[in-house]
Image (cartoon, rainbow, N blue to C red; front, side):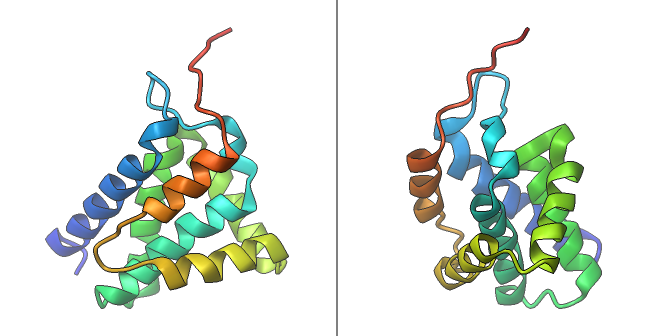
Length: 134
């Protein structure tokens, strides 16, 4: 399944998250920095990826990890690895905010990847990225 099928799922998730966070993205294509350390937003990203994989009958853990990684890279770019390490920590430590957001996101995720609910949450909790350089 690694070939074309997995690439299709990666692209679909990347496009869904780009559309989802578009209202917050700066002119350089970056999301607000505080999103990197927010358990709820990151639990939601992970849950969307995992639920989408389940709905598409992607069952191999490595395949799920690959499409999740692609989604995190789309959202966070160079900071993706740091964010994913944080996500692993929250997941393994049973962080309440993370766990609650994860479950809510899994319930709201459908195969069509309409993430309007996540866009609303993001806009209510984060200011648009500014793209200011020092």
